[in-house]
Image 1 (cartoon, helix red, strand yellow):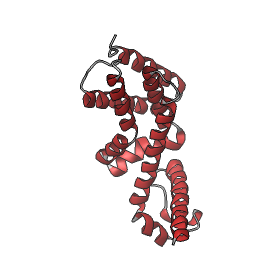
Image 2 (spheres, helix red, strand yellow; image 1 turned 30 degrees about the horizontal axis):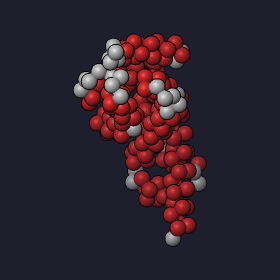
Image 3 (cartoon, helix red, strand yellow; image 1 turned 90 degrees about the horizontal axis):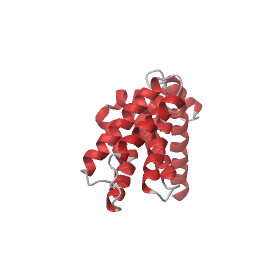
Image 4 (spheres, one colour; image 1 turned 45 degrees about the vertical axis):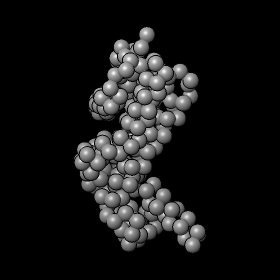
Amino acid sequence: MRRSKEEALATIGHLLEVARKHFTERGYADSSMEEIVAEANLTRGALYHHFGSKKGLFQAVLESVQAEIGERVEAEAIQSDDAWEQLIAGCRAFVAAAVEPRNRRILLVDGPAVLGWEAWRRMDEENSMRHLREQLGLMQLQGVLKPVPLDAMTHFLSGALNESVLWIAQSEDDARPLEETMTVISHFMKGFANE
């Protein structure tokens, strides 16, 4: 029994990896389930068994992208003991990861279009936004962030980051707008420093 569960998890992981490559390179609309399962050396039946549909497979890929970005945010933030540096490092990690070629199309273009903004936002709230809220809450507990409404601040800053990501994704040069975004976020957030 254990072996079959491990095999199923390996099959799911492999299928997600192949599907992510196709969705990244071709987009959702132009990705063929037949080509995905053929490259994964599986049957359509296996895809339907694990994901139900092409949309279900795409949702699982998007969830894995969101989770991966959330993990990167956390990994970058914990490299410092300073709460402000953690916040800025986490914001930078989110923006940089979101505009990477392997994430950009899935996260920013097809995610909201295929699944809708409500589903996309729910995934964002469960991953990157969750880390952002935790960090802002910690900063308030430490007394370094003014006591502003936490939910409002989290949604406001997350919205600014998401809009910045969309803007950066349109640019031919990711480096300059990324640095400009981080400059603005740093200056903006310093206005909420409890000094």
